[in-house]
Length: 344
Image (cartoon, rainbow, N blue to C red; front, top):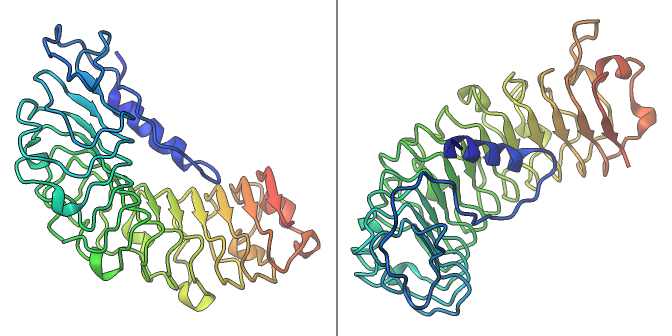
């Protein structure tokens, strides 16, 4: 039987590999048959016989959410014109598992009490591309994925995610969040593996993130420094993206990126003048479009020998002030596993 947890983790890793682009997917998860559904589908929507617990109301120019009949567990409402969530629409489906509301016109003020907060079994809430100025309140502790991408979030109260020990993926990119507005927001998330705060107004990396984190995306902000020991507090972190920020050499403490867990480090489009010190187990290092003028090999390999060498497979240095001729003589020995070194 297909394991939904394995599917989710594989999807997260796939999103993380290489220089990245990904799109949201709304495919129906495989679920064990729970007996024939007796749900009568809302007339505005479609309930396929092969997935009797799913109701598809997407892309139908809906201005309201229809009353959801008993038996529905997966509800797709993306790409409509919905402006509010009225009380009563979910009264028959308090055991709803997935709720997809992406690409609508819902504001925070138009989410009435007794709607989302009644969904005690909800696992995924996809609420991107709306007009929210604050996250929905009183979210269920059963959530494992929350997407609030491309809203107008400027505040994120510290207790919003309190007690959500099942939450594994949190997407907050393309909002108006500041360092201060997210202080203390993530400290209770003991299972969090992916945190995306890219394209906001952060001046620092988020504080208080849980030690469980595997992926931290903070590109396209206003970050100018990394706190000393920041990554040492994240022993499982594998993917860190801080591209398109304002990082300078003086804001990078010695050895801050030299941690053995890290596989991908993206520092492209900053103001670095030197290659930062990294661990020999790092596999992908993106430094394009900085101000680097020297190839400091010792920051990649302390020394090279038959058993001491870098595991880098990708090294991007294009858009800097160095060329292939800048590489020291021992580069081939140090970077013996590299399949892609880009200067131009």
